[in-house]
Length: 269
Image 1 (cartoon, rainbow, N blue to C red):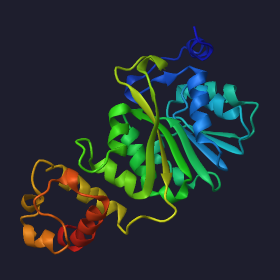
Image 2 (cartoon, rainbow, N blue to C red):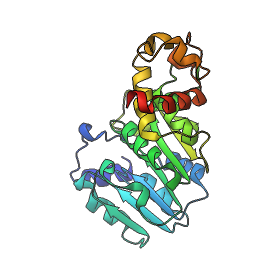
Image 3 (cartoon, rainbow, N blue to C red):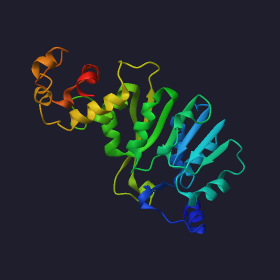
């Protein structure tokens, strides 16, 4: 039995499906994750440290400040024991969705995490809203979600997450992680994704409005744009901002989404 897994069982820990608890116990994988995160920022934030294997890999190197955000109170004492000799570690027993992650520690900040899959998209969106507060986000996602994050216009998995991720960051898949690397073993494959925020945005847009616009447009992804925006004037409306009215949502570029977001600020919201 793996050391960290045995330690958890010694603490009578029970995995909770409701919290998306699938932990990595292979230090070769967590060391690889950390290697892709270098050089470290001043503050590292780890979301959902779980059994602490990734935490231990981070602490092998020179760390100025490591903040752990763990929702499961049954893991807090375990993590405290694991990190008690490291004064650089701060542990919060909180839900990551309710913590202002962008304001923790001191700049510069980065996130390194094996995210709970049941809330991974929500956490990503929260981080993207404040992407300028981070140097990079290196996080594990379900493979299907990872592919959506990096998908390009014209691809079938190009959607809302692709647009809001790529407007503020350069996103890339670093490597795949098989389901056998986790315990309990999930049914899905995983990918490590790194998102590096742009120093200045590629285009001007309002993040909250863009969330609404992309959600609205991709909810009608099988329709042509002229039909989606029939109420706003259809083809004439779209031609006025140099967008082809005869294409579908998955063919819109980032620039065209920004044109729509700007034009729709007064009309829709």
